Amino acid sequence: MNKWIVIALSVVSFCEAQTINQCKERFETYLNFKGSLSNSVKFTEKEIEVYNSRGIKEFSIYAGEIAMLADFFEHTTYKQQSEFLKLKGTKKYSKRQRDSVWIYIDDRKKITKSKKALPFEGYRVAIDPGHFATNLNDAQVEQKYLYFVKDSIHPTDSIKLFESELTFNTAFLLKKMLEELGIKVFVTRQQKDFTSFNCTYNDWLTFHKARVLDSLKDASAMNNERYNKLMKDNPHKFFWDFFRDYDLANRAKKINEFIPHATVIIHYNVDEKNDPWKKTSDKDYTMAFIAGAFTKDNLERPESKLHFLRLLLTKQLNQSEKLASQTVYNFNKNLKVDIASPFDADYLKDNCLLTPSKGVYARNLILCRIINSPLVYGEALYQDSYKECEALMRMDIEKYGIKTNDRLLKTALSYYQALFLTLKGL
Ligand SMILES: [Zn+2]
Image (cartoon, rainbow, N blue to C red):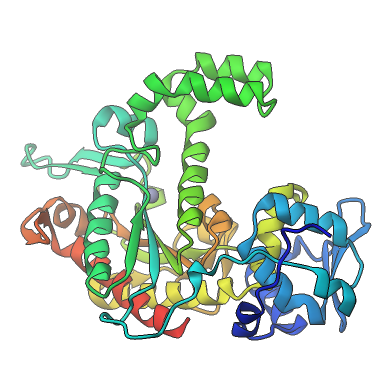
């Protein structure tokens, strides 16, 4: 048996044992998008069965193995996980095999309770401020900005908002608030105009594009045809064909390397029906996303299947729902923005699963799927709302040495209050 598989018994006993029924409930509540996984994952009294696309049972998880496997999927690499799946198949672990199994567990997630000067010392929170564009050039590529004249009678009164700037400002405020509690905070971007690669999109194109594409081609991770096409793409096309997902995967990778106890992904929304956002909307809603809503073809991709198993076996989804529901509750209370029902936006009705918590939706977004911790992907308000757009432009409050406004401050406070409760309950 491979040496890398190790059980740190102290950590295993630290987790409550999960039952098949709890996994089934998670599957039905968050994961099985409109029944599309019902033939791929089956639950019996004794085991959870996972079938491949040809209808052959390829993996079984028995009741007594759930706690061990939950820890395993939370603490190991993709390579270790896929090797393990191949070895295990539908076999049940005997006592003898189990003793010889070693799961490597990184204990940085454990909190030492002794003599803490600050209430949350030892806790780690990752923050991802969404997007990167803070000038009109980048913003036209990324499509995450508002630029219009609000009032045609007073045409100088123009609205110019970059979502990347709003999310970065909010992340900075939240980081400061959390650090005052003794929490260690990691932010995925170092400057408001930076991508997760510690440089602007433009600099990335100039200094890294060719090298990255070459290395992917050399490693056979990209064929010649795609390589040639991407090399010729203009910045706008390249963003949508490659960079957007590449940057998101890098954000998730950096967050996972930090091993957070919880993750906050910060976004500000717009009214989808107001496309192309050249005027204000009279709508304003708040909502949050967590992982889930897997479809059958998701399970056919090897890495995605590993994410699915982690989300099925661990309590991360339940913890994410708590964190997200507290966040939405606070957005509604502090910002006075109504909570979105599934009929308030098509993507809520068409791409998400409703959770039991108001305004919290399970959605298979790259970050929600890959990040290995409880998380909330928050959409505090609609930037193009008639009321919000001007309030978001203001920089009339100074806090922690930066200029901000009441809306961003209340958004940061809402995440802070939600994290406070959630971390206490972990
Ligand atoms: Zn966004």
